[in-house]
Structures are given as structure tokens and as C-alpha cells.
Image 1: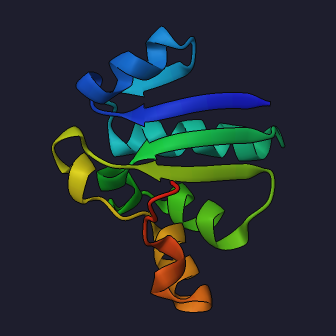
Image 2: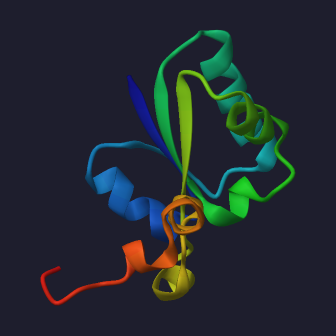
Amino acid sequence: MKILAMGNSALMDGFSLLGIQTYADESNDTINDVLSDLKRSQQRALVFMQHDLINADIPMVKILRQSGGSILICDIPNLHEADDYQPAVEKLIGLVLGASVLEKTNGN
């Protein structure tokens, strides 16, 4: 399984220190090509992608997120938005199980 990270260079520094293959400050076309190659070669992959890129006009991001399968794209916040960031999965949990499930308790 491949693990990749895509985003701005400041955010990618931490991922590269962990030995993860990074794509820093790449164009939308390059990111689309990398994702297309992963799909074409039927590789299993975990792709950490900066939130801005997920919302950008990158066709393969939309295709992979809608179709599911062996390539999982996880969004990560921009560095300056990390404190206010709420992942989509957290919103979904709140809708399904109720917002109180996500509240911090004294034991946590």
C-alpha cells in the first residue's frame, strides 16, 4: 500500500520527515496525473490531501471520493486553520449519533 501526502510545502515537511512520499506545491494537473496513475495501476493507497486541494477543480479527486475503492483520500487542514478545522467524518458522526457523542468529557 502506498501512502502519499499532497499540499503546500510547509505542511508537507512533516509528512516527508515521516518518510511519506510527498507532493508539495504541485499543480492541479500534476495531482490529477498522480491520482490517475494510482487508479490505472490499481494500487491501494492512502492519500493525505490538503483541504484546499480537495475542494479544487481536480477531476480525479472527485471521481475517487465518489467511487470509493482502493484509494482513500483523507483531508487535512491548512496549517493556519488547524484549530478551527472540523473533519467531514466528525460532522457525519454528529448527524448520525448526535453532537453530544463528540463532546469532551473529564475522562478524555
